[in-house]
Image 1: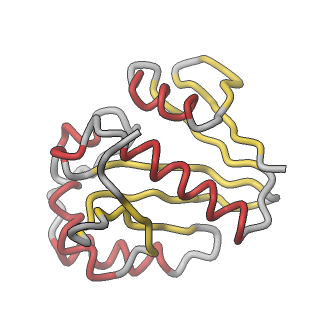
Image 2: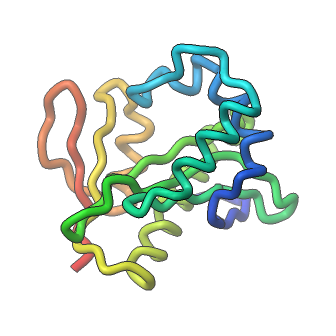
Length: 158
């Protein structure tokens, strides 16, 4: 998949000093389905991270390069409810795009869920134009359920 070794760790407040830069790049948000409508400052990002880390129905992780302990993106579960959760991922550092890191981070999160959480299913929506992401999810074991404006995909755990 990738020659670059990564790990995931819980997102922490000081990650805001890196991630605020990504939130101001329209290229990163083009295919995610949402983007900020204001310029994101470190303080705005810090407040956002503090808020989401306190949510009981979300788990957020940083994707990091092992060799450098470099924080390069996020992988997360939101809307955790009724033994299901919605999956999200993005690589904020463009130099790490198309290197297989998204696949590895996805599999690491799936492994974490299997070992530590009582979930039956992870689901996601992916823009039909985001073929690279769609291929990652298929390779990681997600099945396509519906094809409308977005693809709706699921990974069944149990």
